[in-house]
Length: 399
Image (cartoon, rainbow, N blue to C red; front, side, top):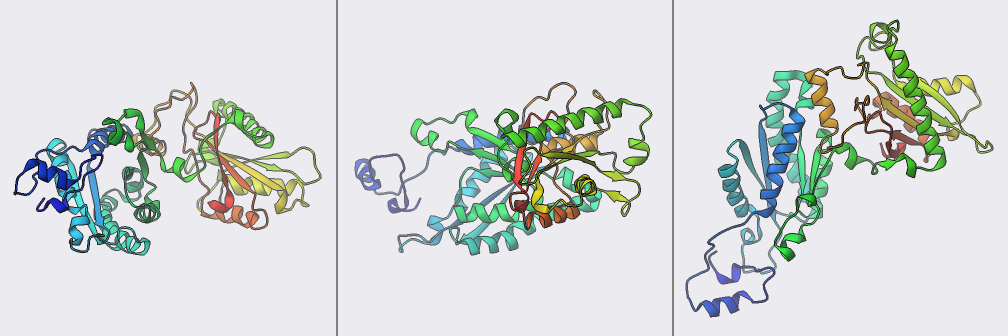
């Protein structure tokens, strides 16, 4: 440690001077053992979660240890004394000793960990290029499939608010999952960490309002979900009909059906009206029509007097053309499991994840936001799976 003055004690009533006097020794303090309770808890859980997500034994794993410092309050100390950089080297040794299959990358920002602008500069010019070094050969090897094969996880265990905000903003394009250790002080006060304190969350869950069970929804929203369930049931009946042309013509490009329900209600009407829409892919790209734009056109075709303020909510659900029990391709199963990273929930029989929760494409997003310009309460409902037992609710303006 060098000097007794550089030793900071936590959870101990005695000062470093008291301990020095009791030891009655002139040589500096020495560390005999180190405990890493957070890493020891997070790493094995993360490895198991990523193995479940990838569904293959061949997973290349990297851990980025991001360090930095503020400015020491004691002006006699160097900035390095207030930095976590040295600690990261010890952590790197610990990880590589017990998890030799993990590649550890050290990334230090220097001074400024508490300043937002300096964190943005560090993330953009130092951290992201290192991630891109991993992404670039992957994209060259597998093309557009890199998005379904690359999974980032952000550990919400410690860090200044400025740093975490800069990281979250910069990494959004990767749609990272999150692992949250939400009872950090348990270790300090009770010298133990509980497995239940560790929570994995998907990007979709973190980006939206929490899942809401159907029974807790308000009246109009509950009616919208009920209409979606009816629509889904009708679609499933058509899917079982061997004479349908869903996969051979209407959805012959992607074979990924998307259903939508639009709730429309004028201010002087006592009950809402519901309209149904579905994506159509007669030819690509100009001959395709997304579900959201389809249902908006259907509503307006039924009554040209509708105004944007009358459009209250739109629900969007991804379905599959597979019959229950049909095994999925490796490509689809990886993409779907990534969408649900961190969830251990079992699905009811006959239900599937599909691409849920599904977000509007660029064109649909533009349409919805044009409606929300005069109707800021316009909301979009999505679902974690086809059971429709829970929903995500989000204002269109926040997309």
